[in-house]
Length: 292
Image (spheres, helix red, strand yellow):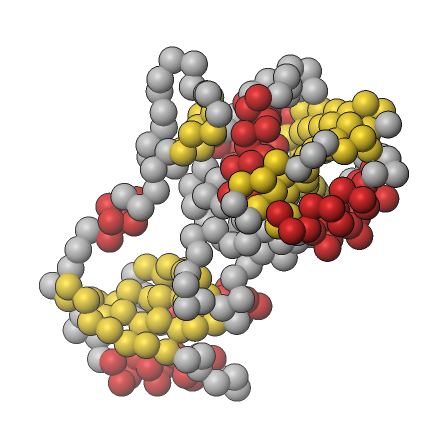
């Protein structure tokens, strides 16, 4: 049996609408993929982390009439034009198994694992964070996320309060909680990221000690460890504010910073923190410091 596959290349703000149009017109499944020439499974770290273009693909039965279906999609998108489209016929395959095979557990440090829900690590001593790939930034595959996870895995977190600023999927806050932290806040400007991070906290059974909220909703807190995995320019702009959220002698962890940008970011935080030399991995770096 073959399938009719229609792919529409959508702008970020139209992804939900395009997905609904495909579903309401008979798509048996709708999937999202980075539409850039070199797709990324995980977007670059940013406060606004959706892909610049998203390929929204609907899978239809192979004997669907292509002309009629395309006409219905155009009518459903009116008065806006139908996004750029691609139509293909594909042979029957086990799509779910193929997709799942692309994601395997990833290890950070000695005991921390980020695992898709269908492939947990059950080894003795393993700390496993269940996290399925999705739109919100933070699956562990990007080097900057990995640098933060390695720091948390090696830190003494028992009883600590963590603030994850720009939390995306909630991966860093949830990892910290599963490694022994007492509580965590996750902050993000993206409403979908907050929904996703709460769902991930539920999945990992730490929802009772995790709070996800927008920046303007964050109360006055004094975190023991603040982690911010965003980009260099936002980190510089946010430095006075983030400094107020860390208790004296509390720890600061910054990532999403290119190795060439470390001096700029370190200087921005030097007024409030004793900054350590950067830890570089390829083109990416992690910056750490202790509140004065």
